Amino acid sequence: MPRVVHFEIHADDIDRAKAFYAAVFDWTFEDWGQVAGSEYWGIRTGPDEEPGINGGLMQRPDPTGEPGSGANAFVCTIQVEDYDATEQRILSTGGLLAQPKTALMGMAWQGYYADPDGNTFGIHQPDPTAA
Image (cartoon, rainbow, N blue to C red; front, side, top):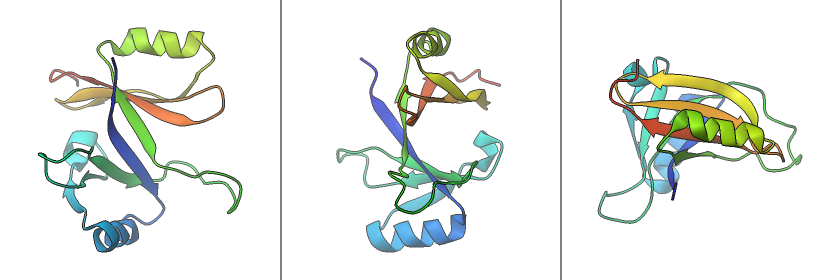
């Protein structure tokens, strides 16, 4: 069964976001830009032996809604075994493509979709040959 394995925070000011989450939650950040192909910071939310997931911090790709207009939330990513088959299921059941399948060099395939209510989520297929 596919599980949520990663979350992302989209920020207008990455340095401000890093400072905020480090000060509030003691999260630490690691530069993953080389893997992602753009500025991207891995977020470690705690020790590996404790329950929870880690995430990422990236530049916001699109403007947000007006304050008070509803949730403006983290994006969760679900790990899948077959990216292309999962994408077909998403699209055939009313989901929409938000950002196309992209190689995270030497790590995985990643893409983003919107559910029928417009909620964004990612899918992630590990693949060390992704290029």
